[in-house]
Image 1 (cartoon, rainbow, N blue to C red):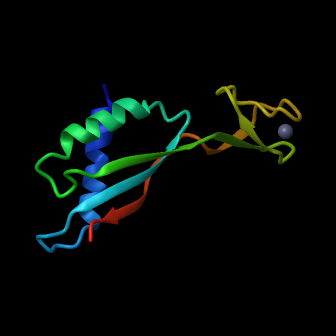
Image 2: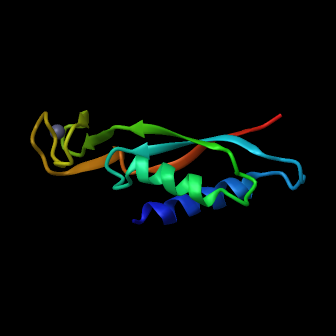
Length: 114
Ligand SMILES: [Zn+2]
């Protein structure tokens, strides 16, 4: 279950942003998670909840913003949203496409407790 190591990575990223003050605690963390990032949201949440014990993130909620898979065609320039990871352009059927979104995992927001 590689979601555990992804959860560890999120905790490390968030910890790196936290001020040094001792009484800081984190209320919530929001991430962008690509639909085809190969990460299971439920498993990731579970791993996060287990791993945040004994860290400044203890009690924090992990909010997952699911990002659709979008591509841009190198041939005709059309941007499309795909439901399945078949990487060809729906407009001209070119297989030369650039992935814009849908594979990412980024921490985008950290909310601290007052
Ligand atoms: Zn095209």
